[in-house]
Amino acid sequence: MLKKRAILFVNGDLRQKESALSLIEPGDFIVAVDGGLRHVRELNLRPDLLVGDFDSIDPGMVETLRSEGVEISKFPEKKNETDLELALEIVLEKGWTSICVMGALGKRLDQTFGNIFLLTQPTLMNCDIRLDDGVEEVFLIRSHSAVYGKKGDIVSLIPLSEKAVGVRTEGLEYPLKNEILFRYKTRGISNVLIGESGHVQVKEGVVLCIHTRTDEATYL
Image 1 (cartoon, helix red, strand yellow):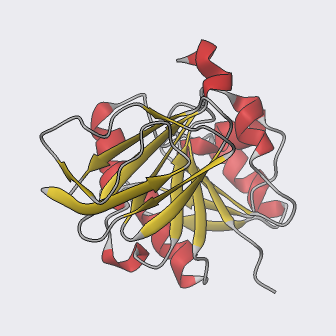
Image 2 (cartoon, one colour):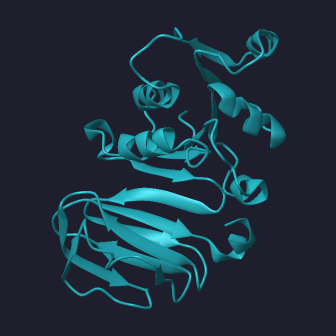
Image 3 (cartoon, helix red, strand yellow):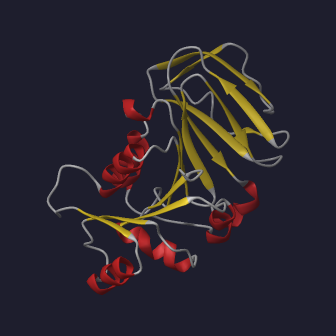
């Protein structure tokens, strides 16, 4: 029976580990993506799958996990894809459409941008996939989506397409009513949740949503 959701741990920043741990539910399929294994171990989790070229992992640890029955997918160091891209291909092949990627933000700017733009892959269009570091979650909105948090959380909407047409919001302090957001303008930055959820609709275009949990403001 397919588990509820795939949680991928990447070797970027995990700014608030307790918050990240609270997002994991029983039955989630845990994937350690190469050096992201350090986050898995720090959170006292056991991976179901280890993916990567393992240039950031002690070889002895790989063999220990193999002996414990963890599925191992090893790739060459010289390759055209990042370890995260390969891991996403694997979980998609296994059938998951709900995916959370932990530790995919921060540390290296090139990796962060690469991870964000991975979300635009056509194969992920029908998936609910979010990047999270325990403080912020990042995801795409192509038609409609919900943001769940607490009153006062910051919600920023940034077009990845040249413009986003027909943008409507509910549950945000500064409502957008059938508006156009342009990629080169900052109209959608720093909106605020007025309750525990907000909703965003987009008629045309693709919007990047960045949800910042204000409870974790000390980590910003």
